[in-house]
Length: 335
Image 1 (tube, rainbow, N blue to C red):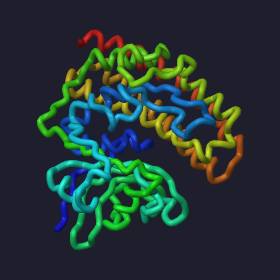
Image 2: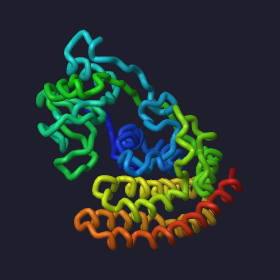
Image 3: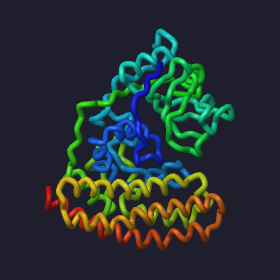
Image 4: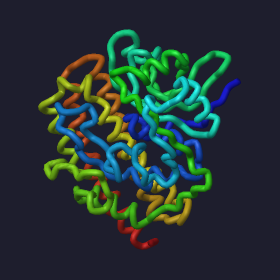
């Protein structure tokens, strides 16, 4: 017997703390616009040497899946494994049969698809989405070493899943989520306008989105992250091999702004937004080209390669500032 809850790779996938919950939502195309309505602001979350996720989207919570404010995801239960009165795998199977996903902070040492498999204990996160009784395995949504880090559904034997969850290097907690099938997202023009306005003016968005804690005042917000990326390339290019993911987030932000414009065009058929969308395509393309340059640098570390990104950033910033400023004006007109 096989049971598999639906997930689809979202276009926001560089960081798992975004990708895992969004993989649930992205299966339902009628609600995917929720992503581009919220993923419009960037900020420097950490110093370069502090964390690999130093550039991130600014949302209502640093870790979206733990938030109770996501309208399309019902946080049904959080339970410590010590309180289970039966084997972990039996509990997980029953939860999946009831239509719930399980989010866990586990030990990668026991994950066959992980870089850390049988190599070292490493705390990580994944989403359990299904099971196969004949194969005695769970289906988990996670990055896979077997496919060069692709986000995909992987098979994990029951016994290894139990060891991974119960490990002293894991949190030993199961968090259960159910998709709200009756949810229908309507574009929130005021929210989109405020986030884009904050982005283009480099404003701290903490007044608009409630976080568990506000980021330090010194952090860069919005379009000012261009300068932080340049500063990173000038002074920390030796760290690109381990800190390359923010360049993926940077590209995903441009994709999200583009998808917002696509939704606005579909709903309002605004010719000026259509023109702005065509102009913005070059920003999305250049951000994708930057990713290619970073990958080239990782294969052949040469500062001249990384340095070639800087003039691209300068022209991108001018174009993006012009387009988003005009887009905000058009959103105000149709609001």
